[in-house]
Length: 332
Image (tube, rainbow, N blue to C red; front, side, top):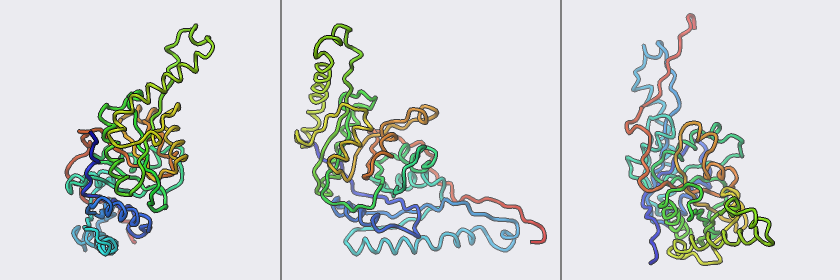
């Protein structure tokens, strides 16, 4: 029985810098929203600190200070929303005083009941992404709905969407996560009218072979062939349910991140859909997960999906404006 794609009816677009919103961001949002028949909320968090001192507070109330800082954002968002509305997309705007930025996005996602978050992530590669992209990583780890990172300026066409699955669960993914990945990949492919492909990495498991088997003529090749066959048979039922044909199934003997990058490049994928598991502490920094290792390698957009029932680890109440007091220097 074929499975239905995931239902995406509401898309929250988290805009980091509303003064310079690239045209490709709105172009991609428009394409997805039209294909999914979804409504859009353009969201911006006022998360930068507001610096105040005793002189300022003596003449101006906090409400006035907040209003001055906030007044430009709704106007700019409404201007961007008008571009989408003219194309037939139902679009609302929202500006919240809240920080840090990733928590603000998650709180807006939950209160608006969004099904998908889109964020522009176009930048150069970095060696230590968990340090240099803290906001993006924390959003990926803690957002309760899938997050689509826009990593390049190429507008969507009919290039493939690639789902990265692990049917053998060799890399510690929850059993139901592959189903979620394929459901959202199917929805994205249908919205973009693109072919849906799937990639699965496997290990030959040569460590389980006896010395006699290892040195026997053709022993290693037989082990590799057996591992590949096992990976294909394990992936087959789920991929068939989502209508992925044999020629669009890529079973790769490689580490997951490298397998995903290699396959995405070979088929010129415009989007990769993968799963992520939130981790904390040193294990997150030293080990990470496939999504973390693959993200900097991939040049296409990446849709990151969480396991069913995932719960965000952020407070539900907004923090409001981040007010920082500064000392007043005498005579100035």
